[in-house]
Picture 1 (cartoon, rainbow, N blue to C red):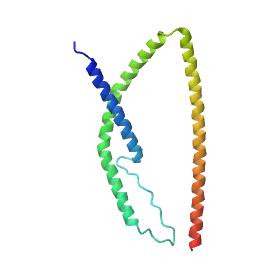
Picture 2: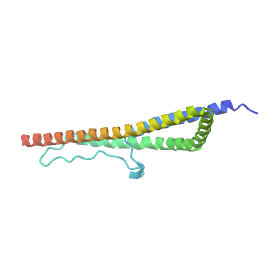
Picture 3: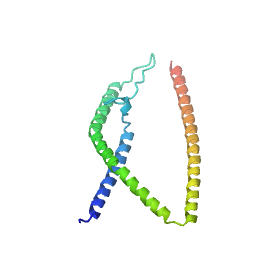
Picture 4: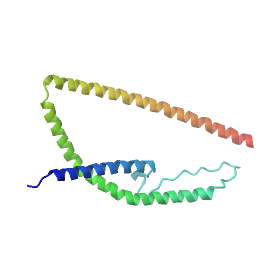
Length: 172
């Protein structure tokens, strides 16, 4: 019988490489503000056009801005033409291996747990419960903090909107 160790190593290395690639591609996709699949296939996100206020001069850079916007859309489309097949391959690998790995990890965990003395098992369960409660408290605190920052962000944006209006009014 052939030695299965090199095959397991190669399979593990392939899964690890796919995970790393998937995470890095996911980060790049998020950083590029990729269009969501819900917005339609091939739909591109665009910067909202900010209309010039009545009586204001048009932006002298408008043609350059439009050229750059078109170039950005073109590059994003090209990126996704190359990225999407790779993500499909990664998803297929996840589908193939994740459930098998999870099952093996569960079996290993069960064997480790049954080998522990009852007192240690009870301590482990209590620790798990305490950590879960702490995680829930942490999640609530994080949500509150995010809400506070969102409120502060809105307040700052409103202050600057008012200042812009006052500046425009003062020029006229």
